[in-house]
Amino acid sequence: MAEQQEFKSTGTVTALVPRKGQVENTAFTRLELNILLQAYGLGVAAGEWRDYAIDFLSDAAIFSIFRFSADRPHYTIEKRPQLAQRQGAYAVRDQRGSVLRRGHDLERVLFCLRPARRLK
Image (cartoon, rainbow, N blue to C red; front, top):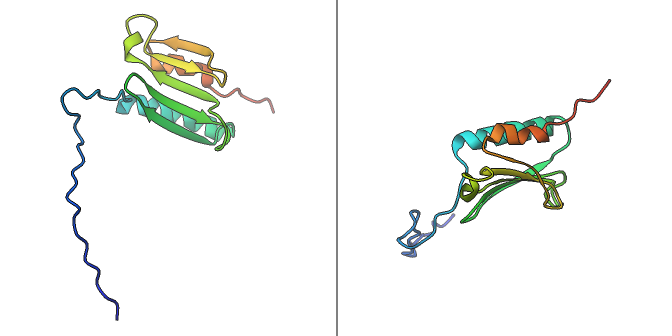
């Protein structure tokens, strides 16, 4: 017969809301994530991209696009709210870290990532 295991609580509590003095991480909104995933889906359908990753840092949110899973990110899309009044909160960078496009509107910034149409 199978014995039932008893699970006991360890009594640790994880805070989901930042405490006073803690820095909140920058994140993408649901609309921004929808736009990012639509652009990513076009690249996957074209056979150019294979994987993605999302990082939430204290000063930036980063969406990385990989051509191969074990490789460095082919493109990174950054959201930096501190630059929203100056150059624009969004930037697309290539593998070397060079800024391909920067601006205030995410859809326009992502336009440089559209896969090229191939001639038949």
